[in-house]
Image (cartoon, rainbow, N blue to C red; front, side):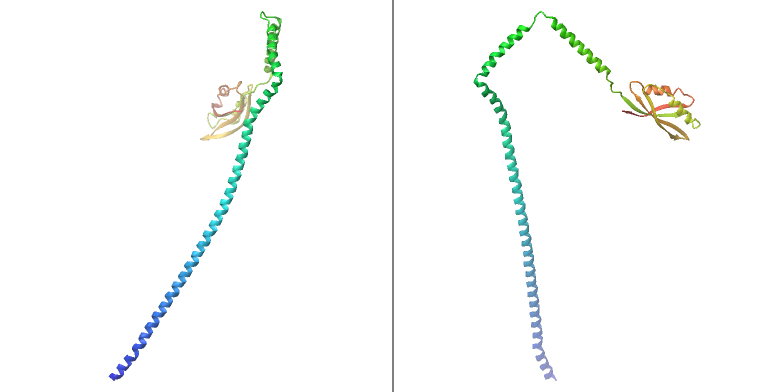
Amino acid sequence: LNECILMNTTVSIPFLFKDVGSNTILQDIARARENIQKSLAGSISAAADQGEIICRIKSLELENHSLRKVVDDLRAALSKLDCRVSLLEKSPAAVAAAPAAAHTNGTAVQQKTSVPVKDEEEDSDIDLFGSDDDEEAAQLKEKRLKEYAEKKAKKPGIIAKSSILLDVKPWDDETDMVKLEECVRSVVADGLLWGTSKLVPVGYGIKKLQIACVVEDDKVGTDLLEEEITKFEDYIQSVDVAAFNKI
């Protein structure tokens, strides 16, 4: 029995070593495959990055080319402007030089000699003691000024107007608002024109009359309106200016 056990143990040991060796080989192969895949993936990503870099470089080159073209166009435009400015700066000198050249044939001498003669003639026409011509000129000037003043006075001037919104308050809620509005509109004056109106609640059943009017500033003022409206003491307690606008 002991011999059989020894024989079995001696036989199983080599098989155990074979299994262990095969497992290690498989693991090495798997690691090698994994390393190869990683290296391939790295090379692919590197190639992709390189392609992206190449695309960026090409786009930058195109942009640089377009910018160079723009710069060249700007330089050409600036050069044209410089030429025009230089021509404009030179043109007054040429214009001034042209009359000088034209007078070199002797006409300038004639003009110079003619000027003093004209001055002498003007001096001879001056009357130091006055004459009737001065009086006639003064009368004519005065007549023209008078005509101008009359013409200007006939023209209608600008009439300054204002738009006024009044708040007319009654004594209580029993006041006849229709009669109150009739009293307000009965105020008549030159340069006064009544407009729209409405009743605005104040509180406790009391309503105020809000009425608009247009007035000529030189003829009608807010003081006059207030004074004339408050004369109707039976209906009106007070008058306030809610809005005042120039037209």
